[in-house]
Image 1 (tube, rainbow, N blue to C red):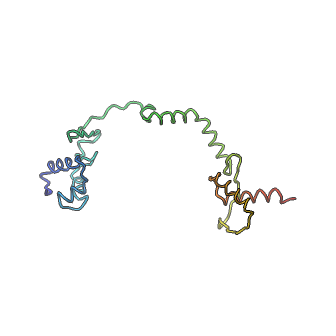
Image 2 (cartoon, rainbow, N blue to C red):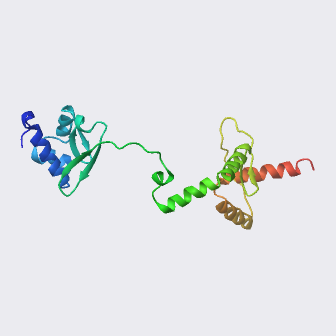
Length: 187
């Protein structure tokens, strides 16, 4: 098929029919028009066509309107916009399970906000009483050191770190050492 601006309507109808059959636009461009991909698409866009629901439509035909694709007849049906109604929870969330979750969140809004405010007011991270409150480090943040540790103690530490993945091992070791120093420094 040759690109001819005089035959634009029939070209668009042909392309829309092929697209409705499931062919890719790049495939149509290469096999039917013998051009590189996106060439025909760009030409159609310059002619004020827009691709909506895998069909090309004149921009003037769809401005302010919704387009519905009727699969059985390969036609586009243009509908006038409906009057806006107030959105309800059912409009926002259509699946029953998601509705239940959303309603549960709304029911627990105050509790959730209390948890967030407590979390923000706490300067360090915490988990069930575990608080990581380390001094700010200037310059290089990491310091590597090799230490020999009792195997059973290290196994318990690794298990503890595995159960508290919200903290890094660096944070846990640093906090443990800091608490040990603060506890026994003046003795």
